[in-house]
Amino acid sequence: MKIADLRTDYRLQTLDETGVAPDAFRQFERWLDEALKADLPEPTAMSLATVGADGRPAARIVLLKGFDQNGFMFFTNYASRKGQELDAAGQAALLFHWAELERQVRIEGSVGKIAPHESDAYFASRPAASRLGAWASPQSEPIADRAALEARLQAITEKFRNAGDAIPRPSHWGGYRLVPDMLEFWQGRRSRLHDRIRYRRSAGDPGAWTIDRLAP
Image 1: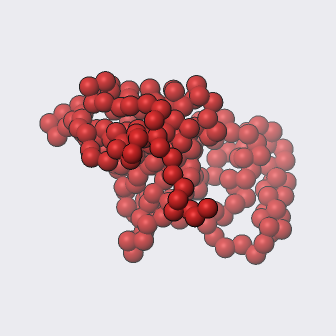
Image 2: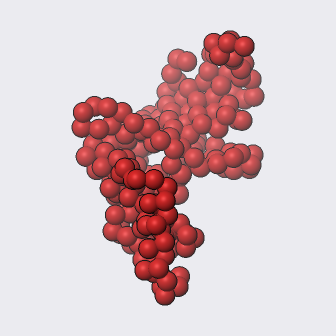
Image 3: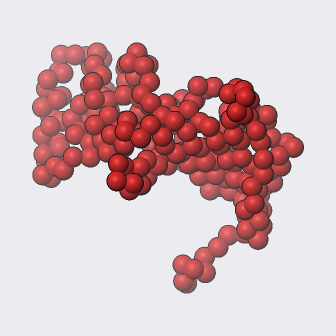
């Protein structure tokens, strides 16, 4: 079988601009809720796309950890490649792909660090091993081998041996919030004539959205 011959004819559902929510966040909440109820693997996984100062793009999977009318929240090492590119550019894109539902959601907008107390609250909710890992890993930096990473973890574990459940958040780790100005909801359809409904912030009212259909 040639990979060029692999194809799926999508036919599960339809999407029409007359039936979507007037608010983009409400429409996203509907679809995320359906993905959660469908018991999909990693329904909160999303591709995060950034761009470097040289114009070179990069993408990786991160997990959505919260969203509301203020935007979409995720966490990482501030000193990592993605952290540095987020800080420098101030813009990013997200992509959810729920293959089992034949759906995608594209999100674009401005991005910035969340308040320290928000990062503290989420960090405290993580398992102790994950908190220690955030201290131990110099994310995106070259390391000698796996043993070097495990040695760093052992040293950090010893350092916080008496901390109990009060392992503090490292200053190089925390959250970002992407504030969208565009969301696109994609529903697979037969013969590649997919449904694409786009939301854009209304120029005169940042709380309102302009909705249109895009050609597939």
